[in-house]
Every structure is written in C-alpha cells, then in structure tokens.
Length: 266
Length: 103
Length: 193
Image (cartoon, rainbow over all chains, first blue to last red; front, side, top):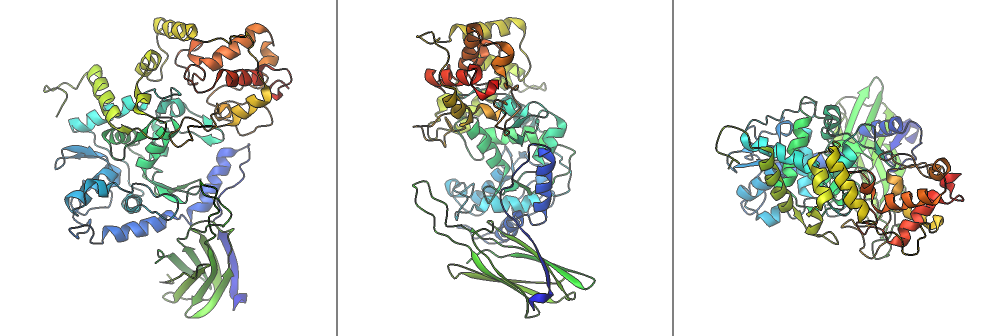
C-alpha cells in the first residue's frame, strides 16, 4: 500500500546554516517553513487539558479563574494583560494571575505554584508554560489593548520604563544596550528596537514562542529572565513586581498590533 | 504515558493531506550531560499511519529526526469523516496511538 | 497605594526611587551573580538617568574624566600581547553570567557586536566594524595606547558607551586586554590584512 503514499514532505530539523547575505530573509523563510508544524500546539493542547482539569488540594479547575474578562473567560484575555486586579490589589501579568488562581482557588502553596516556571529542556515540563500556551493561543489575531488607566497600571508602566534603561552588572548593560536602536544584531541574530512602536509590536506579539534550539515553549517571563541572565544580572524572580512592570512597559508599547503567538523561533 | 499527538487531516479532490505533531524527546544518544556522561538515545523508531485500518504509511526513524517531530504526508483517496490513525513506537518500547477524522 | 494622594501623577524622582526599590526586590542572587551587581557606580547611575540619550557636555566630560583617570596602564609599558590569544578571547562568549562556571573561561565576545577579522562572518553590528583597525589608524604607540585604554574602559573615551569596561570591571585580566589589543594592532593580525 505504500505505493499510494505520494510524499513524506517535511521533517522538522533543528539548525540551519545561515547565509551571511539576506540573513533576515533566510530566517523569515525558516520560520515560515516551521510555522505549519509549530510544536507550540503540543503545549497548547496540554495547557487546555490542564485548564479544564480539577487540580490541587481543593481539586478545582481554572474555569473560575478570572483573567480580567470574567471568571473562566480565556478568549482575548491575554491581549489586555498585564492589568490591575482589584481582588489582589496588584497589577498582574498572565503568569502571575495563573499562580494567583492556583493559590486562591486550587489551594496550592505559593511555593508549589511557582515551583516549575520553566521546563528544563528535557523531561521536566512546566505546567505554567503549557497553560500560558493555551491562554495566549486564544488571543491570536486580537489587537493588543492594554488600558493603562488605573494609577497602579500607570505606575507599573513608568517603573518598567525605568528598568528598561537601568545600567548595571559587570558589563554596564541595560535592556536598551541591545534593544534601543534600529537594525542592530548580535552575531547574526537581529535585535528588535523595543523603544520604537514597530519594534515593540513585532517583538511582543510573537511571544510566547516554541524555541527550536531548546525544544521548549517559552513564555514572556522566561524571555525577560533569560535577557537578564545575558545582561550578567542576578536571577529575575518569577512573577516579581519588576518582571510585571517591564512586561507592562513592553505590552503597552505593542498596543494596536494583532497578537500572533505562540510563535516559533530558532 | 506520552503526551498526545496533534493530527490534522484534510481531503482536497482525491488527495488527503495528513499533518502530525508528536511530543517526543528524540534524544540522539550522542550528547553528553554536564558531567560528561553520554545521555542514552531515546527516539521514535517506527511510525505507522492507517486510513480506515488500511496502512498508508510506514516509516523507520532514527536519531536524526528532531525533538517534537512534525510529519506531513499525502495519500490518494480518503473522504470526509474517514478515520486516520497514527502510531509511533520508540526504542524503549513505549508507544502512542492517536486518531483523527478527515475534514 | 499610590505614590501621592493628590491627582497629579508622581514626579520623575518619585518614580525613580520606586523603580529602584522594585528592581532590587525583583532579583535573587544566583551562581556568581550576587545582588551587588545591581549597585550602580557613578557612571552607571549617570548613564541610566539619560535613558539612552547623550548626556549634556558637563556630565559627559565628568564621566570621561573619572573613567580615564582610573585606567590602570600596563606596568611594563607594553600594550600588545599575543593576537592569536586575542582572537580566542574575541570569540569567547562565556563569562560572568550566573549560568557560567566562575572558574572560567571568560571572554570579551567582541564578535557579538563588532566585525574584526574577515574570516569570521558571524559578527554583530551594535559596535562599529574594527576590520583594518590599525591599517587605517596607524600602528604607532599612541594608537596602541588608545586601543588598550578603550578596551580597558570604553567610557573614558565615549561616555555611556554600549561597550563594557573590560579591564575596569574585572571582566578581563591585564594580559587578556593586551592580547585583544594585539588582535587590533599587530600588523600580522588578520584584522589588519
């Protein structure tokens, strides 16, 4: 019967040789080739399962968890995060809100809820990454719309902006060192200029993403954590106020652009 | 228990296109851990696809296939609502079978 | 809890103070990266204030002066080491991250931002191309001293430079700074071919 098989068309293979010329085009082609079979979908499926599964000491699902648009409403929620939540009296991003629901509704301790924010690239997978994949996939195509009207939201935005320009560590790096100008790159990796509207929109709307080089779906919390690692800073704490403020700054700068993730990156 | 596959199958004219995402480590057996010890190979070896219980694809895979592999293939025939079933077996003997209906 | 009870938004100074407190509370020491990495010296503090813009003349002069005066020139008066070692240091991206082995290696990762030798095509563009660095500037002692000083402390020549202060901040040893200087200055270095 194998004669009826026309073609085994594509196997996703990590790592491509990048030509010096037209690097941007080549990377774009590479991403396009992978988009059809983005393994992020595996995380989305697992996350959807987790969302609907009774979990924790109290054995409840996430279906009463309010991401800002009402209990259990997932559609479009990510496009309006971070936001101020009166019940917690705090500005929260998605990851922080998921942890909040795990603690207040499912009965986990805070430490347990935050235990595995990121997968280790091998067998230890992160439920948070899967939940984020699912929730963010439900905002695909929806325009980013961070209100930034509550005084605490405005304060978070301004703190995030200050953090973006904070120079420190052994190397004097700030976020702006690499992400403050158009058309720059590290080695052959293009760098978005996050101080421009266009740059912030393109970068923010394509996270979370499946990183082919790591075989993991990575969230925006991970993105910031790993940037600071490379900045030679200490470890950014998962769901810290600083991580939320910086996310607020970048998410708000991406307002108006259609959300387009989970994406796939090298 | 391995994570489920994502299977999509669409028929256009007389050809059905099947796209499958599998969740698997696909460890090559060539890498070393931080301590310099070889990480044992762990990868899918056999993939079988059936259309209404009739085999339409058999593949033998090795460690060169990436983590979380994506497989896309076409076969002649198939109609909306027909059942596509995919099975993989890895070198540890673990297996996973999932199915989807042709749309 | 707002920064002030009245309707006007908090001042820049108030936000600055709050941002610093939030930032310091948002990191944890890990590996070789302690929380002291968030303690800014005068240069870092001044450059942070200008948020990516060029500081005014008085500030620029002050930053360049204090950084220039702090440069530790080589005791033996020789600026050039071994360019082959310099090339290895220029390629080495590891060092000082909390995920790096504190025992080393530590490199300068020059290629992350600069073009140097024509053989290496994977180079970044945050800094200018340094290909033919000495061929166009000359091989003299004054240029050698400039190259050494610039690698030791970039802010001595260009306040709020994007470039790390490799000698000043103890990223590279004096011998490593000499090796990288040789990569730029040695007539036999592929940089000058």
